[in-house]
Length: 112
Image (cartoon, rainbow, N blue to C red; front, side):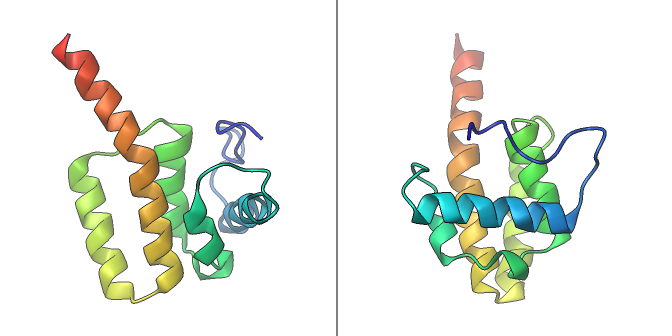
């Protein structure tokens, strides 16, 4: 599965159930060694994730973080801290690992 082959298509909208299924599929692929990286998936129970997590996933993965700023990340991170949900904490780590190279590439491009 390629990174862009996710469940969020414009015509389908956002579904918590589909998001959880997608994370579950990715977790299974990671467990079976068919997916590189994303080790955080191994510690995530997809059923513990929320619609807010799905919205962040969509913005970061599907939209390449075009509409997700460092302020958005800080706000999301604060909500995760107060949730005391280990699956959401691991998911935050996954999001940070996905968004960092996107932001770095964007900043490097702006320097040129």
